[in-house]
Amino acid sequence: MTTSTPARTEPTSSRNAQVETSGIKPGRISQALHAGILIGSVLLALGLLYVFGTVSLFPLLMLGAAIYLVVIYVVGRAIEGRRHGLDRFVTGLVTTFFLMALIPLLSVIWTVVSKGLARFDAEFFTWSMRGVLGEGGGAYHAIMGTLIITGITTLLSVPIGIFAAIYLVEYGQKGRLAKALTFFVDVMTGIPSIVAGLFAVALFTLFLGPGARMGIIGSVALMVLMIPVVVRSTEEMLRLVPNELREASYALGVPKWLTISKVVLPTAAAGIGTGVTLAIARVIGETAPLLVTVGTTTNLNVNPFDGRMQTLPVFAYYSYATPGIPREAFTERMWAAVLTLMLIVMTLNIIARLISKFFAPKTGR
Amino acid sequence: MSKLIEVTDLDIYYGDFLAVENVSMTIEPKAITALIGPSGCGKSTFLRSLNRMHEVIPGAYCKGNVTMDGQNLYGKNVDPVSVRRRIGMVFQRPNPFPTMSIKENVLAGVKLNNTKISKSDANDLVESSLRGANLWEEVKDRLDQPGSGLSGGQQQRLCIARTIAIQPDVVLMDEPCSALDPISTLAIEDLMNELKNEYTIVIVTHNMQQAARVSDRTGFFNIAGTGKPGKLIEFDDTEKIFSNPANKATEDYVSGRFG
Ligand SMILES: Nc1ncnc2c1ncn2[C@@H]1O[C@H](COP(=O)(O)OP(=O)(O)OP(=O)(O)O)[C@@H](O)[C@H]1O
Ligand SMILES: [Mg+2]
Image (cartoon, rainbow over all chains, first blue to last red; front, side, top):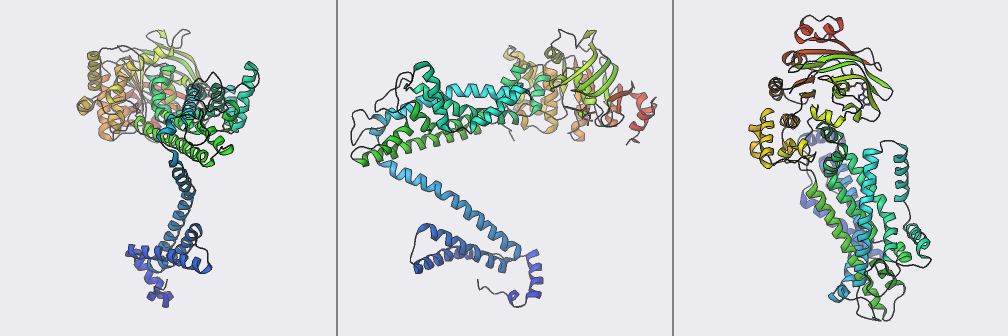
């Protein structure tokens, strides 16, 4: 802060000098000085907090960032000129906010991984909770339930969603039906998930009477949540396909449905695949609709048409809400289940990236 | 192969908007017909109505008659898809299919229609079409690479190859050189001169020299003002249009004294 240049003492002439030098060969803050300022700011913040008696991570980071921003601005301005000083300041500010956004994310990952690893073992992935009262046991039944129910949901939602999007983009033009469909899709994307669950319950009560619990009911509830997401993302991707490609195809004497299936869909395939994968990730962690439609069980049940099934989110919920004794066994299983769920979602995200990488139209340049 | 197209009293609409009014012309086989005129006068619109691409746009339709060798293209039980197979079209901006290789692009008309074709026939078709479009020598070693990896001029010739691979009777070109450099433009003009031995060719261009260089007949379209329909002002031998046009507006336009 006290780097006094001749500029400081002679404001007018120095300004001219600075303009000249900054135009041609401005001074630069060396990397060493930059690192020094950074470390110095943090140390200063640490000292201040120590004096006032409360040293903890979050205030330290906030105070350190604030001190750093002030110092880098003043020093930058003195050495590099006004514009560069401001540039340093804004860069620092943006980085600070970026790091702040990362904090919750990283701390979630840290919490889940550190607590989940305790029971992230072979038994967890091969045992159900049948007959398990305290320690041991696993979530095999919940993992299977989640995979089956989400799988059915995906199998049913993806074709419906893609065909609806094709209708909207390629056939509906601006007709009444298309407008209505768009409106309902919009409404449905915002629907609270418990509403979807209760809807499925009400629907199946008509056929099966009250109190029925089955995997398929859960799938229907999740479909209500998933279809609009698939429609939306597919629609967006289809609209991105340039009209020129459709016209090129028509001009070759290719009928409309072949144009759609062989030109439009392949061109949009990467985006659609990504959208579908993210839609799966969206519904796989739903808890409320599964609580009311599928229920919970300690046994392995892989038949979605017969009785209750366990799923990972519900498993985690019950482990937390109604633990047995010893409580730690239940908490540990809960964290392991959450970790599993998180890994599944992460895998889906990676798959989505791979899809968009490998299926994207190649430019060859 | 090449066919004579006759247009009589054609009115072309976008919804309620009459874009082109009352066009009649005879497009000769084995010749190049050029369409010129100021922007917005309906050249593209007219061209697209010749192979029924116009009606692809929602709400667009036309009234009047277009016949090819006596057969009405807008007849009741004529399938627009089959019309487009016989009258190919090349667009202003090169538009190869981005998901397909060079070879697949040339074969697009066959493959997209699910037509069965033997491997050797396919290879022959690829080679003859690419040779026809003057592109074979440049791409023969990389047929399996994406078509969108070619230069703009090469892409446009690829699109021409794709069009002649479906063996149409007529080729329509809408400003095929407007995105190209002079050398690619010359290559495509040479190509048009060769193609005219086999095909009927109609080309829209903003380049007077190009129209004068390549075409046999020229049609001049004009528009009275914005919102008014475009009209065919004069249609005659290219030589006559550029040296001694009958209409004052045509003369002003071709001599550059226009607007
Ligand atoms: N898709 C469309 N919907 C509605 N009107 C259109 C459409 N395309 C063109 N038009 C209108 O039709 C008229 C003729 O357009 P067209 O594209 O045929 O002109 P053009 O002669 O090809 O012009 P340019 O030389 O700029 O390409 C214009 O008034 C244009 O605004
Ligand atoms: Mg045009």
